[in-house]
Image 1: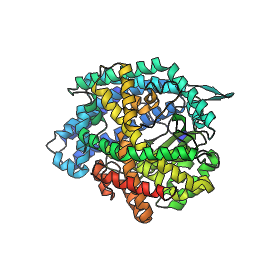
Image 2: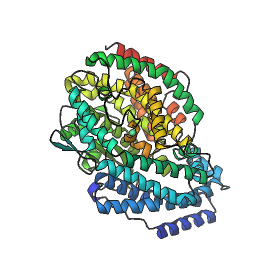
Image 3: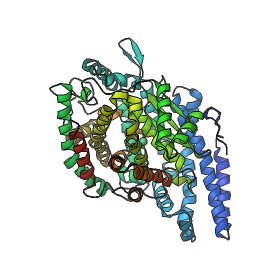
Image 4: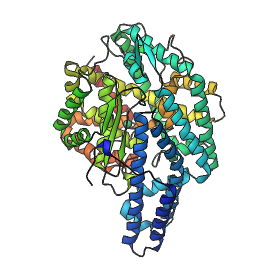
Length: 563
Ligand SMILES: [Zn+2]
Protein backbone atom coordinates (compact mmCIF):
# COMPACT_ATOMS: atom_id res chain seq x y z
CA UNK A 1 0.00 0.00 0.00
CA UNK A 2 1.42 3.38 -0.89
CA UNK A 3 2.10 5.65 2.05
CA UNK A 4 0.16 8.93 2.04
CA UNK A 5 1.49 12.14 3.52
CA UNK A 6 0.55 12.63 7.14
CA UNK A 7 -1.83 15.51 6.35
CA UNK A 8 -3.75 13.21 3.99
CA UNK A 9 -3.98 10.30 6.39
CA UNK A 10 -7.54 9.26 7.09
CA UNK A 11 -8.85 6.40 9.15
CA UNK A 12 -12.46 5.45 9.48
CA UNK A 13 -13.98 6.03 12.90
CA UNK A 14 -14.92 2.56 14.15
CA UNK A 15 -18.46 1.85 15.27
CA UNK A 16 -18.93 -0.66 18.06
CA UNK A 17 -21.74 -2.61 16.39
CA UNK A 18 -19.74 -3.05 13.17
CA UNK A 19 -16.67 -4.24 15.04
CA UNK A 20 -18.79 -6.61 17.10
CA UNK A 21 -20.19 -8.10 13.91
CA UNK A 22 -16.73 -8.45 12.38
CA UNK A 23 -15.39 -10.08 15.52
CA UNK A 24 -18.19 -12.59 15.75
CA UNK A 25 -17.66 -13.50 12.08
CA UNK A 26 -13.93 -14.00 12.73
CA UNK A 27 -14.70 -16.05 15.79
CA UNK A 28 -17.19 -18.37 14.10
CA UNK A 29 -14.90 -18.76 11.09
CA UNK A 30 -12.12 -19.81 13.45
CA UNK A 31 -14.40 -22.35 15.12
CA UNK A 32 -15.60 -23.70 11.80
CA UNK A 33 -12.12 -23.88 10.25
CA UNK A 34 -11.20 -27.42 9.29
CA UNK A 35 -7.56 -26.79 8.33
CA UNK A 36 -4.58 -24.93 9.79
CA UNK A 37 -4.69 -22.56 6.78
CA UNK A 38 -8.30 -21.65 7.48
CA UNK A 39 -7.53 -21.01 11.15
CA UNK A 40 -4.61 -18.76 10.20
CA UNK A 41 -6.81 -16.88 7.73
CA UNK A 42 -9.29 -16.09 10.52
CA UNK A 43 -6.48 -14.85 12.77
CA UNK A 44 -5.11 -12.68 9.95
CA UNK A 45 -8.52 -11.03 9.51
CA UNK A 46 -8.60 -10.29 13.22
CA UNK A 47 -5.09 -8.86 12.99
CA UNK A 48 -6.09 -6.63 10.04
CA UNK A 49 -9.03 -5.33 12.03
CA UNK A 50 -6.70 -4.52 14.92
CA UNK A 51 -4.34 -2.68 12.54
CA UNK A 52 -7.18 -0.55 11.14
CA UNK A 53 -8.56 0.36 14.55
CA UNK A 54 -5.06 0.86 15.94
CA UNK A 55 -4.29 3.34 13.16
CA UNK A 56 -7.43 5.30 13.93
CA UNK A 57 -6.60 5.32 17.65
CA UNK A 58 -3.07 6.58 16.99
CA UNK A 59 -4.36 9.38 14.78
CA UNK A 60 -6.94 10.45 17.35
CA UNK A 61 -4.40 10.45 20.19
CA UNK A 62 -1.79 12.26 18.15
CA UNK A 63 -4.10 14.99 16.87
CA UNK A 64 -5.34 15.70 20.39
CA UNK A 65 -1.74 16.03 21.59
CA UNK A 66 -0.94 18.34 18.68
CA UNK A 67 -3.77 20.68 19.64
CA UNK A 68 -5.29 20.04 23.07
CA UNK A 69 -7.69 23.00 22.68
CA UNK A 70 -9.36 21.71 19.51
CA UNK A 71 -12.94 20.73 20.33
CA UNK A 72 -13.33 18.23 17.48
CA UNK A 73 -10.10 16.46 18.49
CA UNK A 74 -11.24 16.37 22.10
CA UNK A 75 -14.55 14.82 21.06
CA UNK A 76 -12.75 12.16 19.03
CA UNK A 77 -10.51 11.43 21.97
CA UNK A 78 -13.49 11.08 24.34
CA UNK A 79 -15.19 8.78 21.84
CA UNK A 80 -12.00 6.71 21.61
CA UNK A 81 -11.62 6.50 25.38
CA UNK A 82 -15.17 5.25 25.78
CA UNK A 83 -14.86 2.75 22.97
CA UNK A 84 -11.43 1.41 23.94
CA UNK A 85 -12.42 -0.76 26.94
CA UNK A 86 -15.30 -2.25 24.93
CA UNK A 87 -12.91 -3.18 22.13
CA UNK A 88 -10.41 -4.56 24.65
CA UNK A 89 -13.13 -6.87 25.93
CA UNK A 90 -14.02 -8.04 22.43
CA UNK A 91 -10.39 -8.77 21.63
CA UNK A 92 -9.91 -10.51 24.96
CA UNK A 93 -12.77 -12.88 24.23
CA UNK A 94 -10.99 -13.95 21.07
CA UNK A 95 -7.63 -14.14 22.85
CA UNK A 96 -9.19 -16.44 25.46
CA UNK A 97 -10.51 -18.62 22.67
CA UNK A 98 -7.00 -18.91 21.20
CA UNK A 99 -5.47 -19.56 24.63
CA UNK A 100 -7.77 -22.49 25.32
CA UNK A 101 -7.95 -23.77 21.75
CA UNK A 102 -7.05 -27.42 21.15
CA UNK A 103 -5.07 -26.05 18.19
CA UNK A 104 -2.85 -23.92 20.41
CA UNK A 105 0.35 -25.96 19.78
CA UNK A 106 -0.12 -25.50 16.04
CA UNK A 107 -0.69 -21.74 16.53
CA UNK A 108 2.30 -21.39 18.83
CA UNK A 109 4.46 -22.98 16.14
CA UNK A 110 3.26 -20.32 13.73
CA UNK A 111 3.39 -17.26 15.97
CA UNK A 112 5.72 -18.19 18.81
CA UNK A 113 4.99 -18.43 22.53
CA UNK A 114 5.29 -14.72 23.30
CA UNK A 115 1.87 -13.79 21.88
CA UNK A 116 0.25 -16.37 24.14
CA UNK A 117 2.11 -15.03 27.18
CA UNK A 118 0.88 -11.50 26.33
CA UNK A 119 -2.69 -12.64 25.71
CA UNK A 120 -2.73 -14.58 28.94
CA UNK A 121 -1.83 -11.39 30.81
CA UNK A 122 -4.39 -9.37 28.86
CA UNK A 123 -7.12 -11.81 29.72
CA UNK A 124 -6.35 -11.34 33.42
CA UNK A 125 -5.85 -7.56 33.26
CA UNK A 126 -9.21 -6.50 31.82
CA UNK A 127 -12.85 -7.36 32.21
CA UNK A 128 -16.21 -5.75 31.31
CA UNK A 129 -16.68 -5.28 35.06
CA UNK A 130 -14.11 -2.49 35.20
CA UNK A 131 -15.22 -0.60 32.10
CA UNK A 132 -16.58 2.31 34.13
CA UNK A 133 -13.29 2.68 36.01
CA UNK A 134 -11.26 2.43 32.80
CA UNK A 135 -13.20 5.22 31.09
CA UNK A 136 -12.95 7.43 34.17
CA UNK A 137 -9.18 6.79 34.41
CA UNK A 138 -8.76 7.93 30.78
CA UNK A 139 -10.83 11.02 31.47
CA UNK A 140 -8.70 11.95 34.48
CA UNK A 141 -5.54 11.39 32.44
CA UNK A 142 -6.82 13.76 29.76
CA UNK A 143 -7.64 16.30 32.46
CA UNK A 144 -4.03 16.15 33.68
CA UNK A 145 -2.68 16.54 30.12
CA UNK A 146 -4.94 19.52 29.41
CA UNK A 147 -4.10 21.18 32.71
CA UNK A 148 -0.35 21.06 32.00
CA UNK A 149 -0.74 21.99 28.34
CA UNK A 150 -2.74 25.08 29.31
CA UNK A 151 -0.04 26.35 31.70
CA UNK A 152 1.19 29.78 30.63
CA UNK A 153 4.04 31.78 32.05
CA UNK A 154 5.03 35.38 31.73
CA UNK A 155 8.77 35.19 32.12
CA UNK A 156 10.61 38.50 31.78
CA UNK A 157 8.01 39.83 29.37
CA UNK A 158 7.79 36.64 27.26
CA UNK A 159 4.69 34.40 27.24
CA UNK A 160 5.75 30.78 27.47
CA UNK A 161 4.34 27.25 27.70
CA UNK A 162 5.76 24.75 30.18
CA UNK A 163 8.26 23.32 27.63
CA UNK A 164 9.09 26.89 26.58
CA UNK A 165 9.92 27.82 30.15
CA UNK A 166 12.04 24.66 30.33
CA UNK A 167 14.64 26.39 28.22
CA UNK A 168 15.22 28.97 30.97
CA UNK A 169 15.24 26.37 33.73
CA UNK A 170 18.54 25.18 32.26
CA UNK A 171 19.94 28.63 31.48
CA UNK A 172 23.70 29.08 31.97
CA UNK A 173 22.97 32.08 34.21
CA UNK A 174 22.27 30.76 37.68
CA UNK A 175 19.84 33.52 38.65
CA UNK A 176 17.86 33.05 35.46
CA UNK A 177 17.40 29.31 35.93
CA UNK A 178 16.62 29.80 39.60
CA UNK A 179 13.94 32.34 38.75
CA UNK A 180 12.48 30.13 36.00
CA UNK A 181 12.40 27.14 38.34
CA UNK A 182 10.65 29.24 41.00
CA UNK A 183 8.05 30.25 38.46
CA UNK A 184 7.54 26.67 37.29
CA UNK A 185 7.17 25.24 40.79
CA UNK A 186 4.95 28.15 41.82
CA UNK A 187 2.55 26.93 39.11
CA UNK A 188 2.62 23.42 40.57
CA UNK A 189 2.05 24.81 44.08
CA UNK A 190 -0.89 26.88 42.79
CA UNK A 191 -2.39 23.80 41.12
CA UNK A 192 -1.59 21.38 43.92
CA UNK A 193 -5.22 20.89 44.96
CA UNK A 194 -6.25 19.88 41.44
CA UNK A 195 -3.16 17.71 40.85
CA UNK A 196 -3.73 15.97 44.19
CA UNK A 197 -7.40 15.43 43.47
CA UNK A 198 -6.72 13.86 40.06
CA UNK A 199 -4.07 11.54 41.44
CA UNK A 200 -6.09 10.53 44.48
CA UNK A 201 -8.98 9.54 42.23
CA UNK A 202 -6.67 7.71 39.84
CA UNK A 203 -5.09 5.70 42.65
CA UNK A 204 -8.43 4.67 44.10
CA UNK A 205 -9.87 3.74 40.70
CA UNK A 206 -6.80 1.71 39.82
CA UNK A 207 -6.92 -0.15 43.13
CA UNK A 208 -10.66 -0.78 42.71
CA UNK A 209 -10.05 -2.18 39.22
CA UNK A 210 -7.39 -4.55 40.52
CA UNK A 211 -9.63 -5.82 43.31
CA UNK A 212 -12.55 -6.36 40.93
CA UNK A 213 -10.24 -8.47 38.77
CA UNK A 214 -9.44 -10.59 41.81
CA UNK A 215 -5.91 -9.25 42.23
CA UNK A 216 -4.27 -8.19 45.48
CA UNK A 217 -3.52 -4.62 44.43
CA UNK A 218 -2.73 -2.39 41.48
CA UNK A 219 0.94 -3.39 41.58
CA UNK A 220 -0.06 -6.84 40.36
CA UNK A 221 -2.37 -5.33 37.76
CA UNK A 222 0.31 -2.85 36.70
CA UNK A 223 2.77 -5.69 36.04
CA UNK A 224 0.17 -7.52 33.94
CA UNK A 225 -0.71 -4.36 32.00
CA UNK A 226 2.96 -3.63 31.37
CA UNK A 227 3.31 -7.22 30.12
CA UNK A 228 6.17 -8.12 32.46
CA UNK A 229 6.45 -11.62 31.10
CA UNK A 230 9.87 -12.72 32.27
CA UNK A 231 10.62 -10.82 35.49
CA UNK A 232 8.84 -10.16 38.77
CA UNK A 233 8.55 -7.65 41.62
CA UNK A 234 11.30 -9.60 43.40
CA UNK A 235 13.68 -9.08 40.45
CA UNK A 236 12.94 -5.36 40.41
CA UNK A 237 13.51 -5.22 44.16
CA UNK A 238 16.97 -6.81 43.76
CA UNK A 239 17.86 -4.35 41.01
CA UNK A 240 16.79 -1.49 43.28
CA UNK A 241 19.30 -2.59 45.90
CA UNK A 242 22.06 -2.68 43.31
CA UNK A 243 21.14 0.83 42.23
CA UNK A 244 21.31 2.01 45.85
CA UNK A 245 24.66 0.30 46.40
CA UNK A 246 26.44 0.97 43.13
CA UNK A 247 24.91 3.94 41.38
CA UNK A 248 23.80 6.30 44.15
CA UNK A 249 27.37 6.64 45.56
CA UNK A 250 28.80 7.25 42.07
CA UNK A 251 26.16 9.90 41.38
CA UNK A 252 26.90 11.54 44.74
CA UNK A 253 30.55 11.83 43.59
CA UNK A 254 29.42 13.24 40.26
CA UNK A 255 27.34 15.88 42.02
CA UNK A 256 30.39 16.91 44.06
CA UNK A 257 32.44 17.23 40.87
CA UNK A 258 29.55 19.17 39.35
CA UNK A 259 29.65 21.70 42.22
CA UNK A 260 33.35 22.21 41.61
CA UNK A 261 32.84 22.58 37.86
CA UNK A 262 30.06 25.12 38.39
CA UNK A 263 32.05 26.96 41.05
CA UNK A 264 29.21 26.73 43.56
CA UNK A 265 29.34 25.67 47.22
CA UNK A 266 26.45 23.29 46.70
CA UNK A 267 24.49 21.99 43.74
CA UNK A 268 20.97 23.27 44.27
CA UNK A 269 17.93 21.78 42.58
CA UNK A 270 18.06 24.42 39.86
CA UNK A 271 21.69 23.47 39.10
CA UNK A 272 21.08 19.74 38.81
CA UNK A 273 20.80 19.66 35.05
CA UNK A 274 23.76 21.99 34.41
CA UNK A 275 27.21 20.50 34.28
CA UNK A 276 29.49 23.31 33.19
CA UNK A 277 29.82 26.94 34.17
CA UNK A 278 29.10 28.10 30.62
CA UNK A 279 25.89 26.05 30.64
CA UNK A 280 25.11 22.89 28.75
CA UNK A 281 26.11 22.70 25.10
CA UNK A 282 23.33 23.73 22.75
CA UNK A 283 22.59 22.71 19.18
CA UNK A 284 24.02 25.35 16.86
CA UNK A 285 20.90 25.94 14.79
CA UNK A 286 17.12 25.93 14.67
CA UNK A 287 14.57 23.25 13.82
CA UNK A 288 15.09 23.19 10.03
CA UNK A 289 18.86 23.24 10.44
CA UNK A 290 18.69 20.28 12.83
CA UNK A 291 16.53 18.27 10.45
CA UNK A 292 19.10 18.90 7.70
CA UNK A 293 21.95 17.82 10.00
CA UNK A 294 19.98 14.73 11.00
CA UNK A 295 19.52 13.80 7.34
CA UNK A 296 23.29 13.91 6.81
CA UNK A 297 23.92 11.96 9.99
CA UNK A 298 21.51 9.13 9.21
CA UNK A 299 22.73 8.90 5.61
CA UNK A 300 26.22 8.54 6.97
CA UNK A 301 25.28 5.96 9.60
CA UNK A 302 23.96 3.54 6.99
CA UNK A 303 22.01 0.34 7.76
CA UNK A 304 18.88 1.85 6.21
CA UNK A 305 18.62 4.73 8.67
CA UNK A 306 19.11 7.39 5.99
CA UNK A 307 16.38 6.11 3.67
CA UNK A 308 14.08 5.76 6.62
CA UNK A 309 14.68 9.31 7.84
CA UNK A 310 14.05 10.70 4.35
CA UNK A 311 10.74 8.87 4.31
CA UNK A 312 9.84 10.48 7.65
CA UNK A 313 10.58 13.98 6.37
CA UNK A 314 8.98 13.49 2.94
CA UNK A 315 5.75 12.17 4.44
CA UNK A 316 5.59 14.81 7.17
CA UNK A 317 5.79 12.23 9.94
CA UNK A 318 7.27 14.56 12.55
CA UNK A 319 5.94 17.42 14.67
CA UNK A 320 8.89 18.77 16.62
CA UNK A 321 8.20 22.44 17.36
CA UNK A 322 6.70 23.61 20.64
CA UNK A 323 3.60 25.82 20.45
CA UNK A 324 0.69 26.98 22.54
CA UNK A 325 -1.92 24.32 23.24
CA UNK A 326 0.35 21.48 22.15
CA UNK A 327 0.84 18.80 24.81
CA UNK A 328 4.27 18.56 26.40
CA UNK A 329 6.78 15.74 26.14
CA UNK A 330 7.99 13.62 23.29
CA UNK A 331 6.74 10.29 21.98
CA UNK A 332 6.57 8.06 18.98
CA UNK A 333 3.41 6.46 17.73
CA UNK A 334 2.67 4.42 14.62
CA UNK A 335 0.05 3.81 11.97
CA UNK A 336 -0.06 0.05 11.34
CA UNK A 337 -2.19 0.48 8.19
CA UNK A 338 0.76 2.05 6.38
CA UNK A 339 3.56 0.60 8.54
CA UNK A 340 4.98 4.01 9.39
CA UNK A 341 5.67 5.79 12.69
CA UNK A 342 5.27 9.42 13.75
CA UNK A 343 7.54 11.47 16.02
CA UNK A 344 6.13 14.09 18.39
CA UNK A 345 8.44 16.45 20.32
CA UNK A 346 8.73 19.97 21.71
CA UNK A 347 11.97 21.55 20.58
CA UNK A 348 13.11 24.43 22.79
CA UNK A 349 16.67 25.11 21.64
CA UNK A 350 18.44 23.00 24.28
CA UNK A 351 20.58 19.85 24.01
CA UNK A 352 17.39 18.03 25.01
CA UNK A 353 16.14 18.56 21.46
CA UNK A 354 18.90 16.38 20.06
CA UNK A 355 18.40 13.78 22.80
CA UNK A 356 14.64 13.60 22.35
CA UNK A 357 15.10 13.48 18.62
CA UNK A 358 17.63 10.63 18.52
CA UNK A 359 15.61 8.85 21.21
CA UNK A 360 12.30 9.01 19.36
CA UNK A 361 14.05 8.15 16.10
CA UNK A 362 15.20 4.91 17.77
CA UNK A 363 11.57 4.04 18.50
CA UNK A 364 10.51 5.08 15.03
CA UNK A 365 13.23 3.03 13.32
CA UNK A 366 12.36 -0.04 15.38
CA UNK A 367 8.67 0.34 14.63
CA UNK A 368 9.39 0.63 10.91
CA UNK A 369 11.89 -2.26 10.97
CA UNK A 370 9.37 -4.61 12.56
CA UNK A 371 6.35 -3.53 10.50
CA UNK A 372 6.15 -6.95 8.85
CA UNK A 373 6.06 -8.98 12.04
CA UNK A 374 3.38 -11.67 12.00
CA UNK A 375 1.09 -10.10 14.57
CA UNK A 376 0.21 -6.60 15.75
CA UNK A 377 1.26 -7.81 19.18
CA UNK A 378 4.84 -7.99 17.86
CA UNK A 379 4.91 -4.63 16.15
CA UNK A 380 6.05 -2.91 19.36
CA UNK A 381 7.97 -4.77 22.03
CA UNK A 382 7.04 -4.41 25.69
CA UNK A 383 8.26 -1.05 26.97
CA UNK A 384 11.51 -1.98 28.68
CA UNK A 385 12.60 -3.65 25.44
CA UNK A 386 11.31 -0.76 23.30
CA UNK A 387 13.38 1.73 25.27
CA UNK A 388 16.55 -0.17 24.38
CA UNK A 389 16.16 0.94 20.75
CA UNK A 390 15.61 4.57 21.67
CA UNK A 391 18.15 4.98 24.45
CA UNK A 392 20.81 3.04 22.52
CA UNK A 393 20.38 5.22 19.44
CA UNK A 394 21.13 8.25 21.63
CA UNK A 395 24.56 6.65 22.18
CA UNK A 396 25.02 5.12 18.73
CA UNK A 397 24.76 8.62 17.19
CA UNK A 398 27.61 9.97 19.34
CA UNK A 399 30.20 10.07 16.54
CA UNK A 400 27.95 12.50 14.63
CA UNK A 401 27.23 14.87 17.50
CA UNK A 402 29.72 17.37 16.05
CA UNK A 403 27.16 18.06 13.32
CA UNK A 404 24.74 19.42 15.92
CA UNK A 405 27.13 20.77 18.55
CA UNK A 406 30.25 21.56 16.45
CA UNK A 407 33.21 22.27 18.77
CA UNK A 408 31.08 21.35 21.80
CA UNK A 409 30.47 17.73 20.72
CA UNK A 410 32.87 16.23 23.27
CA UNK A 411 31.28 18.33 25.99
CA UNK A 412 27.87 17.09 24.91
CA UNK A 413 28.97 13.45 25.09
CA UNK A 414 30.30 13.92 28.60
CA UNK A 415 27.11 15.63 29.81
CA UNK A 416 24.97 13.02 28.05
CA UNK A 417 26.78 10.17 29.79
CA UNK A 418 26.56 11.87 33.18
CA UNK A 419 22.86 12.52 32.61
CA UNK A 420 22.32 8.87 31.67
CA UNK A 421 23.98 7.70 34.90
CA UNK A 422 22.13 10.26 37.01
CA UNK A 423 18.90 9.05 35.47
CA UNK A 424 19.25 5.54 36.92
CA UNK A 425 18.58 6.51 40.59
CA UNK A 426 15.83 8.93 39.53
CA UNK A 427 14.09 6.33 37.37
CA UNK A 428 14.34 3.76 40.14
CA UNK A 429 12.85 6.28 42.58
CA UNK A 430 9.86 6.92 40.32
CA UNK A 431 9.23 3.18 40.05
CA UNK A 432 9.77 2.48 43.74
CA UNK A 433 7.45 5.38 44.64
CA UNK A 434 4.63 3.84 42.63
CA UNK A 435 5.08 0.52 44.45
CA UNK A 436 4.68 2.39 47.75
CA UNK A 437 1.64 4.31 46.52
CA UNK A 438 -0.28 1.32 45.21
CA UNK A 439 0.63 -0.89 48.16
CA UNK A 440 -1.22 1.58 50.42
CA UNK A 441 -4.23 2.70 48.37
CA UNK A 442 -5.88 4.35 51.39
CA UNK A 443 -2.99 6.70 52.11
CA UNK A 444 -3.72 10.43 52.06
CA UNK A 445 -2.12 12.75 49.55
CA UNK A 446 0.04 14.16 52.36
CA UNK A 447 1.32 10.65 53.04
CA UNK A 448 2.02 10.14 49.33
CA UNK A 449 4.07 13.32 49.19
CA UNK A 450 5.93 11.99 52.23
CA UNK A 451 6.61 8.73 50.34
CA UNK A 452 8.22 10.72 47.55
CA UNK A 453 10.41 12.56 50.05
CA UNK A 454 11.55 9.16 51.32
CA UNK A 455 12.46 8.22 47.76
CA UNK A 456 14.45 11.41 47.30
CA UNK A 457 16.36 10.70 50.51
CA UNK A 458 17.15 7.17 49.34
CA UNK A 459 17.96 7.74 45.69
CA UNK A 460 18.70 11.45 45.34
CA UNK A 461 20.24 12.31 48.75
CA UNK A 462 22.03 15.33 47.28
CA UNK A 463 18.78 17.07 46.30
CA UNK A 464 18.32 20.49 47.91
CA UNK A 465 15.33 22.47 46.63
CA UNK A 466 16.18 25.58 48.65
CA UNK A 467 13.47 28.21 48.39
CA UNK A 468 11.58 26.59 45.50
CA UNK A 469 7.86 26.14 46.09
CA UNK A 470 6.31 22.65 46.10
CA UNK A 471 9.50 20.55 45.72
CA UNK A 472 10.57 20.54 49.42
CA UNK A 473 7.08 19.30 50.37
CA UNK A 474 7.53 16.19 48.24
CA UNK A 475 5.70 17.46 45.16
CA UNK A 476 8.36 16.94 42.48
CA UNK A 477 6.78 13.74 41.16
CA UNK A 478 3.65 15.59 40.02
CA UNK A 479 5.44 16.79 36.92
CA UNK A 480 6.26 13.20 35.92
CA UNK A 481 3.47 12.48 33.48
CA UNK A 482 4.02 8.71 33.47
CA UNK A 483 2.93 8.52 37.10
CA UNK A 484 -0.44 9.94 36.12
CA UNK A 485 -0.87 8.53 32.64
CA UNK A 486 1.11 5.29 32.38
CA UNK A 487 1.55 3.73 35.81
CA UNK A 488 4.62 1.53 36.26
CA UNK A 489 6.03 2.64 32.92
CA UNK A 490 9.35 3.77 34.35
CA UNK A 491 11.68 1.00 35.53
CA UNK A 492 11.59 0.26 31.82
CA UNK A 493 13.87 3.25 31.22
CA UNK A 494 16.27 2.05 33.90
CA UNK A 495 16.45 -1.46 32.45
CA UNK A 496 16.86 -0.08 28.94
CA UNK A 497 19.48 2.47 30.05
CA UNK A 498 21.60 -0.38 31.42
CA UNK A 499 21.25 -2.08 28.02
CA UNK A 500 21.96 1.17 26.16
CA UNK A 501 25.16 1.65 28.16
CA UNK A 502 26.19 -1.83 27.07
CA UNK A 503 25.61 -0.81 23.45
CA UNK A 504 27.71 2.29 24.14
CA UNK A 505 30.59 0.09 25.36
CA UNK A 506 30.16 -2.29 22.44
CA UNK A 507 30.05 0.49 19.83
CA UNK A 508 33.32 1.80 21.20
CA UNK A 509 34.95 -1.62 20.92
CA UNK A 510 33.46 -2.80 17.62
CA UNK A 511 31.09 -0.40 15.91
CA UNK A 512 29.98 -2.57 12.94
CA UNK A 513 29.15 -5.43 15.28
CA UNK A 514 27.19 -3.09 17.56
CA UNK A 515 25.26 -1.65 14.60
CA UNK A 516 24.43 -5.11 13.25
CA UNK A 517 23.18 -6.26 16.64
CA UNK A 518 21.16 -3.07 16.97
CA UNK A 519 19.49 -3.33 13.59
CA UNK A 520 18.71 -7.00 14.14
CA UNK A 521 17.19 -6.23 17.52
CA UNK A 522 14.99 -3.54 15.95
CA UNK A 523 13.65 -5.96 13.35
CA UNK A 524 12.67 -8.47 16.04
CA UNK A 525 10.14 -6.00 17.41
CA UNK A 526 8.29 -7.67 20.25
CA UNK A 527 8.50 -11.30 19.18
CA UNK A 528 10.21 -12.23 22.47
CA UNK A 529 10.19 -11.06 26.10
CA UNK A 530 12.75 -8.64 27.53
CA UNK A 531 15.54 -10.90 28.77
CA UNK A 532 15.45 -12.97 25.61
CA UNK A 533 15.63 -9.90 23.35
CA UNK A 534 18.48 -8.44 25.41
CA UNK A 535 20.58 -11.59 25.50
CA UNK A 536 19.74 -12.26 21.84
CA UNK A 537 21.36 -8.90 21.02
CA UNK A 538 24.53 -9.96 22.84
CA UNK A 539 23.70 -7.97 25.98
CA UNK A 540 23.64 -9.12 29.59
CA UNK A 541 20.31 -8.94 31.40
CA UNK A 542 20.32 -5.99 33.83
CA UNK A 543 18.91 -8.38 36.45
CA UNK A 544 22.03 -10.51 36.25
CA UNK A 545 24.25 -9.90 39.27
CA UNK A 546 27.27 -7.85 38.23
CA UNK A 547 25.80 -6.46 35.01
CA UNK A 548 25.06 -3.04 36.46
CA UNK A 549 28.39 -2.74 38.26
CA UNK A 550 30.28 -3.62 35.05
CA UNK A 551 28.70 -0.83 32.97
CA UNK A 552 28.91 1.66 35.81
CA UNK A 553 32.64 0.92 36.16
CA UNK A 554 33.16 1.55 32.42
CA UNK A 555 31.33 4.85 32.61
CA UNK A 556 33.26 5.90 35.72
CA UNK A 557 36.58 5.17 33.96
CA UNK A 558 35.53 7.01 30.82
CA UNK A 559 34.57 10.08 32.84
CA UNK A 560 37.69 9.92 35.01
CA UNK A 561 39.83 10.00 31.86
CA UNK A 562 38.10 13.22 30.79
CA UNK A 563 38.07 15.21 34.03
ZN1 LIG B 1 11.14 6.23 24.76
